[in-house]
Amino acid sequence: MTGLDTAGRRGLPGLSYPERYLHDLSLELTERFDGTFNAETVERYVLESYTALLRTATVKAHLTSRVKRFAADRLTALAQVKGAIAHEVPEVLFVCEQNAGRSQMAAVLTHSIAGDRVHVRSAGSAPAAELNPAVVTALEELGLDVSREFPKPLTDDVVQAADVVVTMGCGDACPIYPGKRYLDWHLDDPELLTLDEVRRVRDEIRTHIEQLLQTLESESNE
Image 1 (cartoon, rainbow, N blue to C red):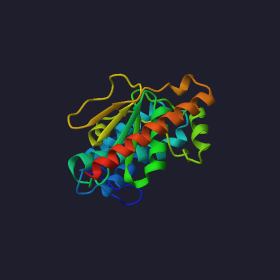
Image 2: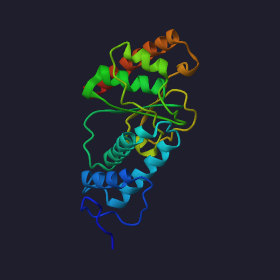
Image 3: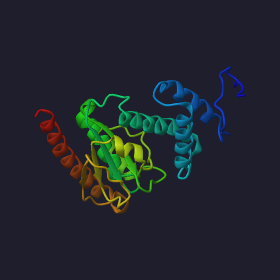
């Protein structure tokens, strides 16, 4: 029989949590997705998300908030695939190798330009520990806040939830699903570039995004 935690809530059975906050997060997300996912599914996603982010974590203090956002976003994506959450706007996923440069710039810029007309996610086939400092600078120069962004591993659920998957040098790591649009943008990797060159890549990404948004808007009006 499962006992109560210190707050008087009934604990989830069958798991030994490496960090106490993971237990509390599992309870919180189980309540949030009640009626869509059972407790075991939520537990698995929380622990998988924690393990994935722990591999590259350099500042453990950031893990709490990052695991919460990553696990919640993955569960949201899975709920979209199941049809439990309405799919009201196009879903665009940007993927590069480290999710520290190109895909992050694309996601932040798309959100800045399109607002709520498009929902964006980003991920990496081999995520880095932190964002590229030059990329952060190039985005902050435009007044864009990237303080809450962090590299995330590519997972199957976010690919399945996407309408458009834009790859930027992630190799063959991105799974292919029928009925989705796949685009490959050939862009230089900011990891090897000066700040001025990163600014050039940033502006190239903006041009690609504007073209993509025009296409999506045109299709929605047909």
